[in-house]
Image 1 (cartoon, helix red, strand yellow):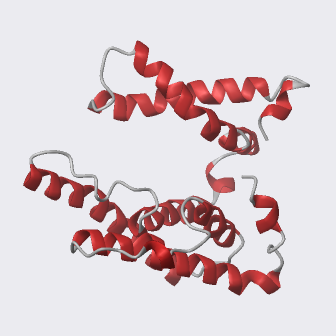
Image 2 (cartoon, rainbow, N blue to C red; image 1 turned 180 degrees about the vertical axis):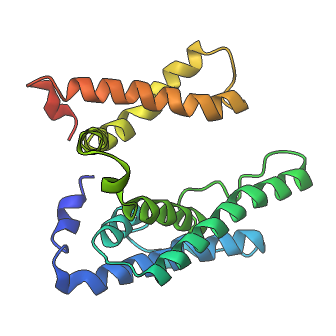
Length: 207
């Protein structure tokens, strides 16, 4: 987040191709090749990794997708890649885990190609939903208010989960936690962030 002011300097249209190049290069050398090497037991030379690797690519890719007029054809391709990403992540994990007799986490990283594909598909899908035809203006304002809390929720949810897991009577690996726990954590985080943002001085805590 401290690096975003630097990236904001490249928001001008003349730098758009450079941003796409950064995303493409990182998806290749950070999100794809290391995974393929892990699957084939080949040692990966991390020296050629992108200096802008990891989660920051989500920020750049999100910005590009949010400001791009994506054709229906390309949207379908993005959706198909998202479905493929989900299959790789979940079916692949199941197959390898059954083979090993324990949970195999080779596909569990958030910065692998299938994770980016799935995230992009969900992002584009919600971007092109015609909310004005589905929801009224009041509902749209409500959603906009919730959206404004997203960064704050992201910043505190992990710490909140640590406290929740000390209280709930089931382990982190349980199905109940991985389903209901998501809703509970998001709901509590939303209430905290939304409330703090309404307090005149404290609201600056959450951007």
